[in-house]
Structure formats: C-alpha cells, structure tokens
Amino acid sequence: MSTLPVRPGLEGAAPYGAPELDVPVRLNVNENPYAPSPAVVDSIARAVAGAAGRLNRYPERDFPALRRALADYLAVESGVRLSPERVWAANGSNEVMLQVLQAFGGPGRACLSFTPTYSMYPEYARDTLTRYVTRARAEDFTLDIAAVREALEDVRPAVLILASPNNPTGTALPLEDVRAVLEIARGGGPLIRNGGSAGPSDAVVVVDEAYGEFRRPGVPSALELLIEDDGGRYPHLVVSRTMSKAFGMAGLRLGYLAASRELVGLLRVVRLPYHLSATTQAAALAALGHREELMSQVASLRSERDALVAWLRERGLTAYDSDSNFVLFGPFQDRRAIFEALLERGVLIRVVGPAGYLRVCVGTPDEMDAFRAALVDVLASRPDRPDGEEKEEST
Ligand SMILES: Cc1ncc(COP(=O)(O)O)c(C=O)c1O
Image (cartoon, rainbow, N blue to C red; front, side, top):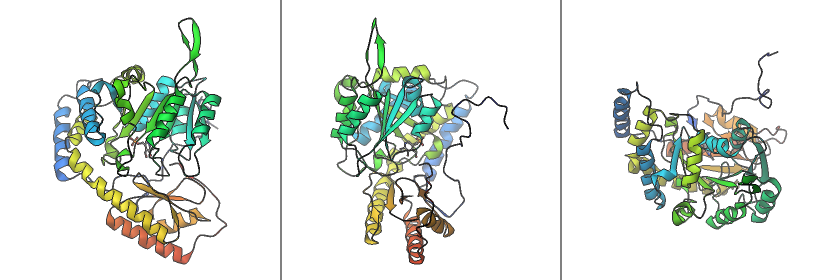
C-alpha cells in the first residue's frame, strides 16, 4: 500500500504507450520506416557537435532560427506562408498540444474531441486538470456538423481537438467542415471576464495534422485557413504538425504548430524556460535543410498505402480510405487473436479503434510483403474465433 500523496485522478493509472517489442516487422506506432541517409546523419552530427561546444549556455528560449525554418517548410509543403512569430515548437506535437491545454484548459474547463481518435488527448486533459468530453464521429469517421454544434452548446469547451487525418481511422476532414467548426466555435468557449462583464470566449480549435503530409492529392491542409489576413480571421485556430511521421524524425522529438500571434504569445507564458534543448534545435535545423530528401519517401509510402487498401479489400475485408501512413482494417470477430497470430509470425500491428478493427502502419515494400504473407497465413488458419474478449490498446 503506497503512502505517496498521488494526485487524485492518477491512482492506478498506467504510463501511456504501445508495447515496445523486438520483432522483425514493427508496424504499430505509425513511424516512417526509412532511416535517415548517411548525408542527413552527417549534417545532424555536425550540427549537434557545434551545439555541444556551447552547452555551458542555455539554448535560445524562443528559437527564432528554427521557427523561421519551420515556417519556410510549411510554405513549401502547403503553400501557406506564415511569419515565424506564428510558429511554435516543442518536444513532439504531444508537448505542443499539452502546452495548448496548459494555456487554455484547467479546473472548470473542458476539452472536447470526437471519437474514435488519438488516445493521448485524454491524457493532456488529465494532466492539466481539464475535463475531457467526447462525442462520436459520423459513421464514415468525418464530423456531423450538427452534432458538433450541439456538443459545443452543451460543453462550451475551452479546447476542441480534431485529428485530421485522424488516428486510427486515417480520415481527413474536408476544409469546409473545419471552417464550419471554426465558425461554431466562435463564442462557443467558456465564459470569460472581459472588463467588468462576463461573456463567451471562442473555443480554441486544434487541428492535429500529425499525418498531414500523407494526405492524398487535392486534400487541403487546415493551414490554408490561417493565411487569411495574418491570423485576424481565425485567431482561435491551431494547426499542429510534427517531424515524427512524414519527416522520419520520430526520435528527434520535434513537434510544432501554427496559429495566431496572440495564441502563440499565450503558449510562451506556459512553456518551461529553455524547453527545447540546444541539441534538439541544432538537429532539427539540420534535418530541415534536407527536407527534399527526407520527404522523398512520402510519395512511395502513399502509393504503398493505397495498394494496401486495395489488397485488403480484394481479400474481402473492409479497409478505410486513408490520408495517413496507416490503414484501419477488419472487421474480425476476435481481433486480438489476429493480432497475436501476426505477432507469432514476427509482425507487430495495433489493436485499436472500433471493435473488430486493427491498424497497420505502412512500412517498406519488404515489410509490407511480410505483413501480407503473414495475414494470408493467419486468415487461412482462422484464429478469428468469436470468443475473444474485446480489449483496446491506446492509439
Ligand atoms: C494524431 C497524432 N497526433 C500526435 C501524435 C504525436 O506525435 P509526436 O509527439 O511524435 O509529434 C501522434 C503520434 O502517434 C498522433 O497519432
């Protein structure tokens, strides 16, 4: 029996994370399967060596050079040119979103999201003493705008998080829907004191585009909604991105967001001083210098993904269209049995999402061959018994 004064709400809680198993084919945490090339490794090593010689000093607190490089990258990737002051970064987009909750959530405040979705959102809420409220996505995993309106009226959240493309379904939201949500969110936040009287605030809408670069051609980024008059139109919009996925830098821990200057200014209040180490800043800047090479695998990962969707459908399975680097497929009466049978064959995927479904991340062509061969073998031996207990892991 512990005598430690654990904070109410944390009793018995387990640390978040998928199993870290050493198996030949790991397709469970939506990583990029391509390791950085020797040229990228060399640039990063030289940049980190340069930073190491100055490690007696604290790093730049507001890292202007990195914000400029990220703004340049967004301009190339999405055609949206933002001033560096509208870009902010932290150790993974997880930390970026935690900072959003630190600035806008808190006791008496709510964070709203639409499920199935990324299972870290409730953790950001828990860690900032924010109430986490969910509503269901539509059957095709997009949003029912009438339901969003109703939920906002009901909950008056300080923060609404929408993953697009969504994890674990791969669904990207149409830009008109994001725009509609932003309009509904105007005045849809908690009551705040403004001068002498209390009035409604605008709920902050976070569009989590961790998988944004994998979107199919013609699918726009919510960044486009940020261009209009330098943040004046949607000061309550945040678009969150990461170098962990398309960029192939999950180990770097560099996530970032774009928003209005006012909103970024509020994040600077809650960030820990010097939260982004000098070595992280140096490595991220060096990696961004190789953006073309690092992004060159995105096209092949996209076509591998589309081929995988088609292949799964040919096998009579449901596979959802995906704008990300993973595919949700099923249904299985006993998805855990399928998961375990694949694992026995050296292929690790994820039990997550709607009952009966599994999520597989797109790997190299060899890894996908191994996944396909293992699944064919597993389905031929039918471990898909109806007696399995439904148990979901975190996304
Ligand atoms: C939807 C979504 N958002 C954010 C993240 C966090 O990414 P990171 O903290 O590596 O930037 C993930 C990681 O899997 C994710 O699936």
